[in-house]
Image 1 (cartoon, protein in one colour):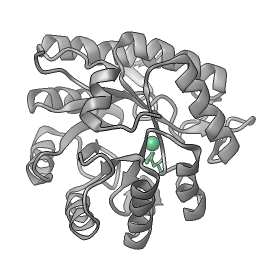
Image 2 (cartoon, rainbow, N blue to C red):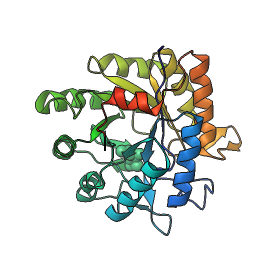
Image 3 (cartoon, protein in one colour):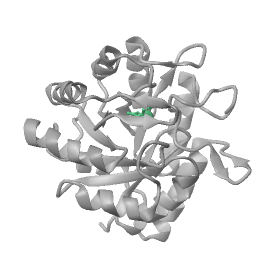
Image 4 (cartoon, protein in one colour):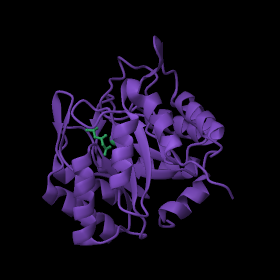
Length: 275
Ligand code: KMH
Ligand code: ZN
């Protein structure tokens, strides 16, 4: 098998309002439908934030469990729950996300300014969350918003060892106002600093989504796309569905002669536990 590209879709996030972005999947039915479409378009992993009945971000454990079950029943996607939640979510709720039994979870490696807000990930919280992933055999995806967070990842691995499954997978989140810029030279700097043997994807927020996607492909990385990260397909054209972004990522991956990776191959690469 030749080289392939792992595509992760992040369909919802915690930041956009349904009223402003009608195509955002916020109900369980919308999320499952989106997941099916994105799997058909080439995604292998889904990074999940959920909403309550009022379309507000929530980390309600029962709803998270129902979501994991529904996505497993309807798709073969690897289910990655966000432990970042919304900037207002308390640490206890973010730690409890793992009790919903996902395949993977996100784990951000440090605090970062996040637009006008602050996304809090102090070292003791990172350690506690990481130890919980190891205990519960959930594969973490290390979210890296700047170079300092790459250093914190080295510190985490040095102190607590490898994640469950033994493989380190990272996601560079670029172009957040407060984090590293979404450009090729920042991407190369971050990739060069990663632990050896780690795999990585990259995503660019807002208008950095295309430059980051193209830089990631040319640097041999994987891709994350979705309406969590951008709600504009092109200037003046709102995204109409997450699958539109996955289709474009799959086209770019095919053009780079690294076609989308199947979910089965992604499970093997990421050493996800069979559940
Ligand atoms: N919503 C952001 C504050 C993650 O999912 O782990 C955090 C975030 C990262 O989206
Ligand atoms: Zn997220």
